[in-house]
Amino acid sequence: MEFTKDLDARGLNCPLPILKTKKALAEMASGQVLRVQATDPGSVRDFQAFAKQTGNHLLEQSQDNEVFTFFMQRK
Image (cartoon, rainbow, N blue to C red):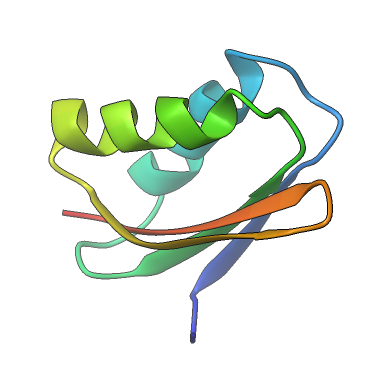
């Protein structure tokens, strides 16, 4: 998937991946896509809740070994 900005949140624990994602999305234009990579297992649940609460779209999520990848589209 194509993305505009990349955020490496690997090694960070809750709530830092979400806080950094929120900041990165605020700097982006509507419709742009942010790729986030995280290692916190709780981030799967956190990103789903974040998308519902903020109206930003969680386009895709995947897991490769212990790295979770999320594609968030700014509303």
